[in-house]
Structures are given as structure tokens and as C-alpha cells.
Amino acid sequence: MKHSAAEILREYGPFPGVKSVAGVSFDGDKVWFASGDKLTAFDPASGETLRSIDVAAHAGTAYDGRHLFQLAKDRIQKIDPDTGQVLATIPAPGGGGDSGLTWAEGTLWVGQNRDRKIHQIDPETGAILRTIESNRYVTGVTWVDGELWHATWEGDQSDIRRVDPETGKVLERLDMPPDKNVSGLESDGGDRFFCGSGPRGVVRAVRRPR
Image 1 (cartoon, rainbow, N blue to C red):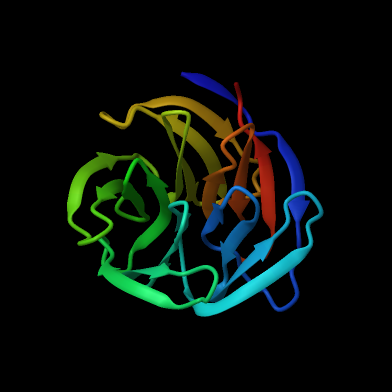
Image 2 (tube, rainbow, N blue to C red; image 1 turned 45 degrees about the horizontal axis):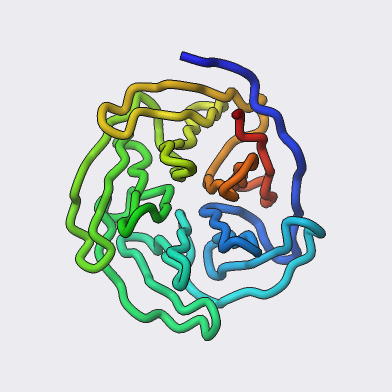
């Protein structure tokens, strides 16, 4: 297993009126993050806040190329990012104990925090298609270049790890500093991960190793 310290590239925020950052996603242009009662988008180049949507947003966030998906307690909402309208909802596999959320190849992947699992689910029905076990609390999940990465936060320590999507075996691990915890995770498709920070109320960019 490759093992190294995480390299923090930039910190965004704090953001006005935002006390906590949970899920994080990227639509190819803007970074979106969940903060309890709204989704907020900012420009990752300037850090400028661009807009927000008033919607329940308690944990992971995902983007499928057209729609945002947002964990809200025991359900996943499908949201039109232009209008903010909730178009559909499906049950969350953890029944409210869910954390990270990402989109990959036509399905959603959902972290189940304290159960230390990642589920691949049908985005139309919520049916579980596959389950991967972790050995730490799962707080974020993302796919990039065919690689599955997830964030952990247990005690006062977080890491970002690349795992085998079939077995869950840890292939690579990036250790965050003790006071820099990760509550949501998304790749920009290149050399950055965007990470939520829980009650710190900021978003951090971390270098993705090549």
C-alpha cells in the first residue's frame, strides 16, 4: 500500500452563514457543498460564492452531469440545479446513517458512516447493487479515472484512501493533519480532491497523487 501525508493545496471559506460543511460535489465548473439547510456553489478559481439553493442538505452531494443528488437524513433527493426543484426522492440505504455520495457510470455510490460500508445503488429505486466494507467510518466517496476513493473520519484523524472497488482492500492512503478532518469528498476529474470539513465550515483542496 502506498502511504503518504495529504498535501493541502488551498482552503476556501469560511462562508457567510455557513456553520458546517458536509457533502461536496463538482459540476465541472462550480464546487457545490451541503450545509444543512442549503446547497451552496462557489468558483474554485476565485473562491467567490456564486449561488445557493434552499433545500435539506445534511450529508453527501453528487452530480450526474445534469442533476444534483443530495442526502437529506433518510432519503436522497434529485435536484434540478437551475431551478432548485426537487424532482424525485429515493430511500437512502443507511436509513439516515449515510455520509458520502458520488455518481459513477450510471449509478450512485453512498457511504454508510458508522457501519463502515460503501453501497452502489440504483439511482431510480435506491436498490443496493453492491456493498464494499471499510475498516473506518466512511465520510466521503468519489470516483476518478476508474479509481474509487473514500474519506474517513474516526476519532480526531481523517484520511483519504484509494480502495479496490471489488474487495475494499486499501491500495493507497493520504493522511490528513490531526486538525483537518474530512466530511465530504469529490474529485475535480484531475489532480484535486475537494473536501468538506464538518464544523470548521470550510472546503479544502487536496492534491490527488498521480
